Length: 467
Image: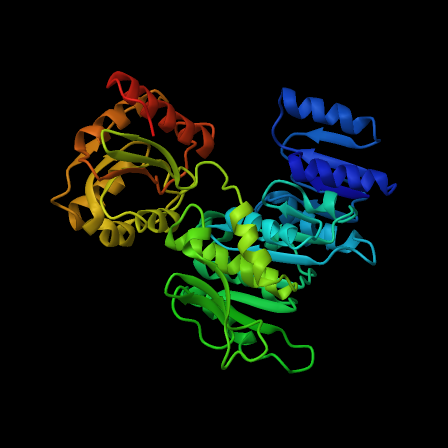
């Protein structure tokens, strides 16, 4: 009997897949609610049983547990390990049940930039004429896609998914960056990084961010391995001039010195800064990572550029909202940790920073220290705003700071009003919170939408249109 831990999108997809294969399947779900009950009723029609309540022991007769992001210290998973029951994730299950001639995987992970990079990759593959699908942490469960008609899968993987995926062997795999996140789940930074590095273990080509210390460390065992039987090819990407075997930048061009006939002497132009939208240094890095994976699959340079031109950024990722009184307002609500916020802050020279939320134990000292020269003001909200205010006092004591109290979602109008008061023509008011949003909002999209609405109301009050 198969036991599925979790009735979310991935767990439901696993249950359907197992039912289709004739496996007796039970789903365990700790949270009850109307939506969960509707899903349970749908699965019951397929012969799948759903049990609500916090499980402490595997159901009798369980031979395999498929978990969908439950932490390793959950009592059910601890009990399963003690009983010798194998526990895998949805991604590992998808790999095991894929058909013999299934589409190859181009997989990527990282603390930040995963969804942007995987969508860029999908656009490049599509521009080259391949039937490509973005799956995994981007939203579509891998288990649903492995039996589909795609030529190639662009697979976004979180650390939660990689933790229980011991067998996957992508054609090529990339690590975009590694910075402290989800340490409460993994237990330590070292364990979090180790799990990220598992994406390389059986990859045909290893793609890594040569500018990121952790990513380079994870790729080090595969460095210069090309040419040895069974060894992975190692390809770095950098925001500097690339060495042979890397992708990087020459002036305002993205160039390839890895997937060319003579990397020691030749480079091939892939795209220019103008092709990367929205333009920011970290987005150029995302484009280089996507290009390296695409090139590993044989995508020509012209399709890399066309893919970047065809790429449509997801909302709330350095999205320009409006220009009001010669001040730009930018929504990067997706910057839910200090590493992401640092990348966003580095993209603008003069900033009124809107920050705060749930820091999840993350340290903001280095973030604030590096950003200080760019800050013209800061408006803080949310549960952990005091920690950011203290860091600003230590590292940016001359920067005016306004704290907006309250945990109701209506505070965003006051936040934007205060930011507008601090901003001067030419500044950017940047929502890059560095924290999660669940203290005040249903998620980072709701936070970004509240910010955008407040900006438009500001423009209306001032009698201006928005640009």
